[in-house]
Image (cartoon, rainbow, N blue to C red; front, side, top):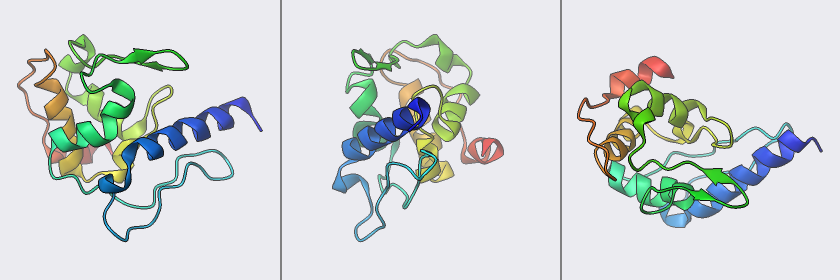
Length: 142
């Protein structure tokens, strides 16, 4: 097994485990850690109603509940006070496409949910970016 495939599968498994049953719609298909190529496989959409709930149930597992990130077996960048969030397209792109070790979790979100979680992070945790992302902005980057 290639190292990259193993890393992707491991990260996807951690994300799937951190989601918990409450994060997925009832009776929905399972989120699988990876296919034969190690790519992130999506089986359902998240059911959280707003950015705060999405952050708590999807993002906080890696970025921590206080959004200060973590280092150890992996590196999960801080979102708190993160100057990279100033350009609102950057976090949208990362959520949709993934980056480094982060899988493309936006594939499991509607455009509204991606906008909501990005706006939540950009206006909390010491971030004060008020130029809100709109679902149309998300759709344009999909």
